[in-house]
Image 1 (cartoon, rainbow, N blue to C red):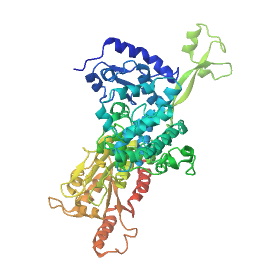
Image 2: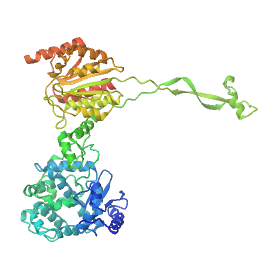
Image 3: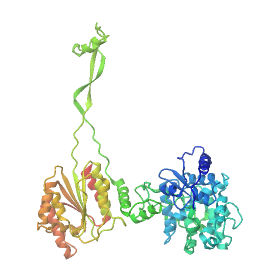
Image 4: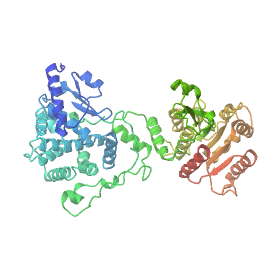
Amino acid sequence: MKKDADTALIDAWRAAWPEALAVWSKFTRLRDPSLCASHVQASKQGLSGSFAMIRLLDQSVVVDLPLVTELGLDDYALEVLAHEIGHHILAPGSASDQFRLLARMRRALPTLEQHAPMVANLYTDLFINDRLQRQANLRMADIYRKLQQGRTAQADAKSGGVWTLYMRIYENLWQLEKGELGGANVDERLDTDAWLGARLIRVYANDWMLAAGRFATLLLPYLVEDTDALSPSRYLQDTRDAARGCQTYGAQQIEDDEEGGAIHPVHDKRISGLDGEEPQAEAPARPGGGQLREPFELGDILKASGVDLSDHEIAIRYYRERALPHLVAFPSRPAPESQEPQMEGLEPWEIGDPLEDIDWLQSVMQSPRPVPGVTTVRRVYGREPARTSDAVPVDLDMYVDSSGSMPNPQAHTSFLTLAGAVIALSALRAGAKVQVTLWSGKNEVMQTPGFLRDEDLILGVLTEFFGGGTCFPIHRLRQTYAARRERPAHILMISDDGITTMFDKDELGNSGWDVSAKALAQGGAGGTMALNLEHNWDGAASHKWLQKTYDDLKRARREQGWDIHAVERYEDLLDFARAFSRRHYV
């Protein structure tokens, strides 16, 4: 039966907290740790498996004291707490750096990406523990000795090369006897790799992010051979869920040196001393530039960081962040001066000023016997900026194709979704309301609950996916414009040649041409089609089966006034979205 921690132990660990903060700097400030007296209490704090953890969201340290006692670490409060503080101060330090670290680890672990959180945790622990052992003279090596003492012979037999290599790296860093921290059976290959690992930690002590891929590459062959790699380190996974609840901005950017960092340390001249690659200084990520991850890649990194979001929720964040650099600026209007003078105050009336300017009431209040030029005052007038009546922005009614010919926005970048996000968010900035309809085959349609200003609901519809046939929801267009709207609305279609299904007959037998014409009339602000078509679509069709489609589009433009924009590549929809937003919402 596992017992709860007693009050004395809690008090002892709480007393060690100020000293643990001072180990890093006397100016270090973090909220007090959560010292949990039971496993249940620790679980409620989000801690399970490990005896300690960090939360980057609120800069908190959580400790499971009953598990600390079980592992024989009661007397190591200073070491454990200083180590957890190190994750805040040194590595990873922030949620964004945790995302960057895991991205590099995953790139260096092909087919074994599921081990990236564990490898990242071991990697950051090396930098923290080496600094605490050597510079702060803390007993970090003793903690591993304690953990080793609690292991059974059966557990030692199961320990694979990953754990043995990891312990041997520490032995090299701290000049300990071979096998002192566990795993005496070390061959020449592992001993060489351990030396390279120790050199990596020392060489990149001040630039740990740059060498992350190198460390993961060093461990890769051992992970391939080691089927139980996670078992020995299960109590040391204190950053497994470190980024849970944190914002995800910046995680979709692929940094310039990320892919090139996945090399074995033996090929890094700074580490091995042999002829090899000379690593370049890390270039900062360029907002809005460079390569961007696919939504599924971002999702894998976030989930590995402990971020508890569904694929759909991740897609919403992905397209919102990716759209931000392309949005129109927030509107601003100069306020003209009021035509009516407004009293601002009083000033002395002097001899020579017009007599009618004297404010006799204020003058008498200052002195019952007015003395011209001394006690006489007059009013001062100015002009007050007037409030202008804001122009009513044009609402947006957007229909986005989600048929099988379109990419799934939750897995791969959909420029239809991205263009829709840019335009919808720009419209919201201008004060407009937005209705989004996602459509595919018959009865495959999703729509926001009318015209609204809720970003999450709008992006929630945009990032869904059907992947079925192609059948425009004429009934939704008909219902939206059954009566004339109080506010003008512009109708926007984002699709390909399948858009002409909107001119078919609806379920009531109404002509789609009539429904379209009425919608444009009731909306009162025109309509636009952004379609994936040949650039010269308004000429002769390149294929006979396209001629009917092109003829329908020409008729729509000629008879109903649709503004049709052809984009030969879906990527060009982003340029269209920027131009459309500036034209309608600036």
